Image 1 (cartoon, rainbow, N blue to C red):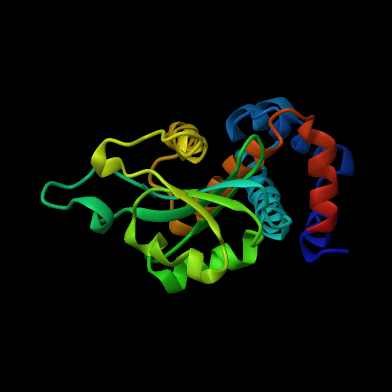
Image 2 (image 1 turned 45 degrees about the horizontal axis):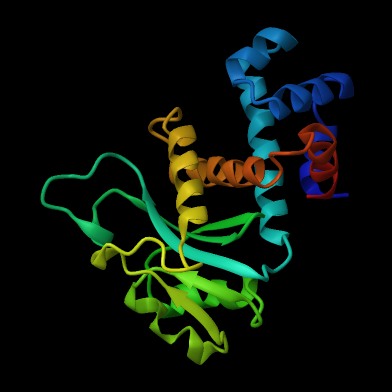
Length: 223
């Protein structure tokens, strides 16, 4: 039994209330709405939503490696760009690296930089060597073939290339757009809170065609 599940079971609210919170979270209601419908204190609801998101983050981290047609990209999240700060060094931004399996799932991870050492460690752990990898023209990706990924295709945005044959990164860029719209609702998040909301975005995207409630019940028990 996971420590997260034990924390749920030690709760002073009933199992029925816990399942009710999970069911309302599954349909994407806010903490305020859940508190009103369950007649619980909002702080209590927020505490349980944090536990749910922690379980989701652990579950997403454990997902199987990606294979097939895979897109790689990085994205900055945070406040509007500060004048004088441009590009990958923009201040007060959180850098996120993403892997997207076409017509499938996405994986995200907060990273300190876009160095080869940082990104390649994630790629090796999450992308099988027989995959077809699509990236933009960032220099970090120059050595992907040397890592053993023999099928690497690129689009160079600085040359106004966005689709070249079957090569593009529109899938992962589409996810970035959806995540930014969703996360804009939660302003002034601390780094650890941002991480949990980011992984929730990932989870909801990956299971967007399924009933989330039974999946969440299992996740809370297992993770």
